[in-house]
Length: 263
Length: 257
Image (cartoon, rainbow over the protein chains, first blue to last red):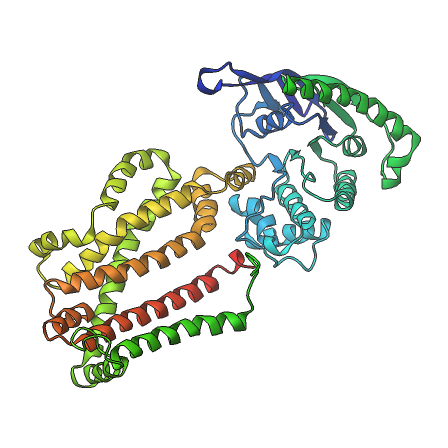
């Protein structure tokens, strides 16, 4: 059975000042198997973030529904952990307290919590920074903490909305390896939104390519590259073939968007 | 000079002090030099002499204490009422829709114009003085706190929801801590305003306090005492501001780290 089912989910935004309503998402059908790493790839404005936010329960679909383990999603909840593109660590909490946030909301005893927090601090390589405030961390470290915070809650599915989008190229590469390493060790169902083609291929077991407005699924590409993946994979011939194919798909979409915007 | 270019701490201090020196020098020049009538403006030296006599002979320090008590009493009263209301308005939009129009209106009612009414209701005792400061501060605090709370970063709220927070959890563990430093800053600002209200309250129907001393000195043309009183208010205001700032810094190290 699928872990996550997206059934006919669409999203229409009401028109501004009596204008035409804007269709952001055409009805989407998607089934995600347990422990799959899915990346959703698309040009900006294709509605991929909207789709992710609907799965998170932060936005309601205009039509259709999202089922997680057979239960309909109506609101955000701890079973769907989310990592945002913007830095959303709570600035008044230290790294350790941020990671503990979800566990505290659940009312878990201090002792049990401390053990879990320590293991996740370790997992994302932030030992020694437990008592730092978010402001004292680099962007990469903040996103590592955000990933740990989402994972510490042990969600059924992990949602990531361009989590490395604001990072420089080198840091981004390291973060990809870190997240992939975690996934390879601790299997988790992941939905990862990105507009970076290399990132989409490198991370995924399956890439969903979305078209420009109104967003819909253009292609669904299985990535059968072996695990564990090493960064050198990005220069291999198999990788290049996939990259060429997806670049072609995305380019057509990006050009369509550009033309629409000009016209 | 290059615009926006920072100045070194040493030069900043020297420049800051220089203005005070020039100001006092100018004051001394026009008064001691005989350029203005002494009846209307005392010179710095007699101001200090008058101040010393006030403190030693007229027990002016008792007035200072009573004024401080009034400011803090009225201010604490206003804060206790206004901060929770402001948070409620910022967090829950129906509460805001209910209260915001009235509070916005009440904010423009001048506290000093309430003094005659407050004297009728509460007499000329301490309660009346506290109420003047209360009326002057409470609506300001409510509105500023409501605006700050209303502009809580939505992405933090969303993040908390995805971590399992309930609606009450959002208010207690996101909205409150996220806005605590700004609320404290607001209170620091309004405390400064409270100092102007207290003097007005003491100018009318009062028999003690710094404001009373000032109005009392006017009838005796004791301009040295008036200026001394004003300077005392300024110094206390400056001190309480420093203390408040230091306290906020100690309370919210994360917002400066």
